[in-house]
Each structure stands twice: as structure tokens, then as C-alpha cells.
View 1: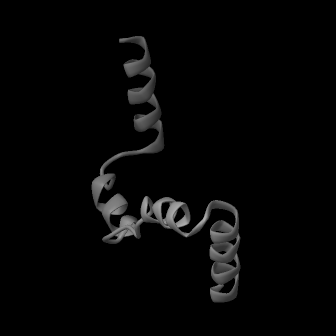
View 2 (view 1 turned 30 degrees about the vertical axis):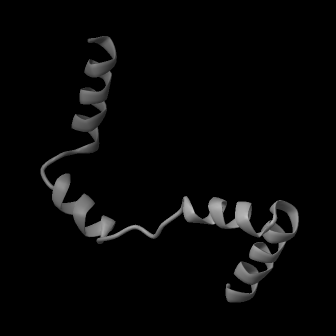
Length: 61
């Protein structure tokens, strides 16, 4: 993966120039926290059927 990252950076720099490549890369940042844990906690009382029903009712309203 590190080799792929280096190749991708080289392509960006070659195609965009160093400044624009850096601008492009700076718009991405690693997330924080544990989404799997957060999602489990957030939806622990919900069912798929209930969530689908809620989405459908929001479309109508």
C-alpha cells in the first residue's frame, strides 16, 4: 500500500504540479473514532424494517 501511495503522489505531482497536488491531498483527512462501535450503539434499538418504514414516511412528508 505504501508503494501505491508513493506512485499516486508522484502522478499527482507530475500532472498537477507540487502546489496543486498538495492542495488536492489536503482536502482529505483520516476520520476519527470507531464508526462500527458508534453505529452499533446508535441503532441498537432499531430494526431494518423500522428504518425502512421511517425513510418511506419521510419521503411522503
